[in-house]
Image (cartoon, rainbow, N blue to C red; front, side, top):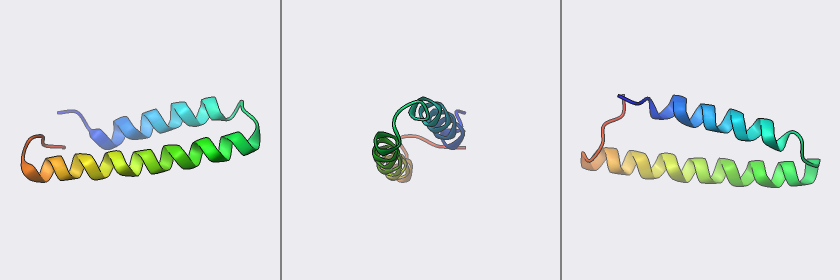
Amino acid sequence: MLNIYNLLKHIFQVTHGVFHYMCPVKHAWLEFNTVRDSAHLIWTLSTVSETGLITAD
């Protein structure tokens, strides 16, 4: 089974590395959006998990 949290962590690390090469203001804004989107994604996944459509390890 795919470990959702490790996948999200990997995606975040990759995007964080990309943001590192941009200007600080843009970095902060994009990082904020990434955290917000990740939180929304996690919320969506847990909601779907509770309905039994997917199961996360």
